[in-house]
Image (cartoon, rainbow, N blue to C red):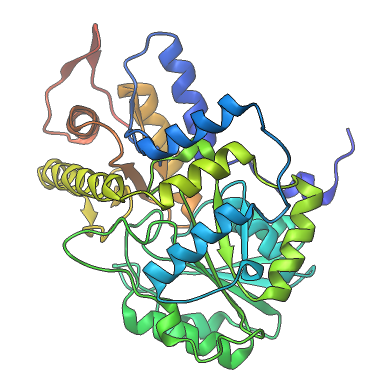
Amino acid sequence: MSLSLIGKSISESATLTLNAKAAMLREKGEPVIHLGGGEPKTKAPFDAIMAVSGLVNTGEVRYTPASGTLLLKKSIIRYTEEFYKRKVSPAEVIASSGAKQSIMVALQAILDPQDELLFPAPYWVSYPEMAKLCGAKPVPVVPKSSAFHPTIQEIESKTTAKTKAIIINSPNNPSGAMYPEEFIADIVAFSEKRGIYLIMDDIYHRLVFDGKKAANCYDYAKDLSDNSRLIVVNGVSKQYAMTGFRIGWAVANKELVKAMSDIQSHQSSGPSVITQVAAAAAINSDQTSVESLRLNLENNLNIMIRELNSFPDIKFSKPDGTFYCFVDFSHYNKDSRALSNYLLDKVRVVTVPGYEFGVDGYLRLSTCGTVKDITEGVQRIKWALDPNSTNETIIGNRKIVKDKI
């Protein structure tokens, strides 16, 4: 079979592959614990569900404009003003079928073949593949800091004449680290000085713990004119637990949004009117669901940390936010893919290997599950890896005998 260069170069999503494997094992009745997912278990806001029901009952489910309905755009404008203190117009907003698509069409509107896209490591698994889909070169920047905080000097050292855009994801998937305000100020100033597009992937910006608050990039931008190269991406999937609704958005200058909309019109047309109505209702609701989810995630994280602290020979920094804890298991196996597969096969616990995020030896553990899943999942991992644990254990209805990895 003859495939294009892009078709040959793109890898499947590691997280979606793990989800599929876990689902297959569960269908077979296996006692799988999923510590690999990025999907909250709480329900979508009631207002969103009622809005969908009302629309469906009318039978008027039609096409939408390529860049999103005015109803949703007005909600995003309100959101941007409330959480970013920034007033924008409908022409500066595009709604997409998920934040992933917003980022993708932005990159397609920005990048030419052989251009470079920079992003700190660890990074979300899709960033390198998105660059490749544009024929561009992904350039990870590995921070020296164990806290996964890059410095502006580290970014600058990787910047070349071909650097067209930088993506910053804070709080970060997979590390949960929130980049310091000083760094956000520096990266905004650096991007403006160099004329580089800066994409702020803020999908987790409200899921932050310990009384902290994510930095607002607009506070440090000097150029907010029609020439601004700042792009802020967000969505309903994480903060509103609306992953299946597939609504994300980007706020950028009018010319770029027009180009993104034109691209999106040929890719997928406008997002579903059903999901746009639901997203608008969630944004305009009383927001108690977001705070409830945040508190639940913070509690789950504290429980996971308690369990991890009883585990010898691992290292981790307490996450500032997100759904994840990024743990250094290199003492046991530096090959995170082999270790992740071993844990799934041996004790039926799903984890995501750090290799997929650009940092091998680590595993990403999710705090989205139940307290029972988090507690038992970490205990199963500890049993499998800790040489001081018992020789046998019971998982599901089966006795498992320990072996060496």
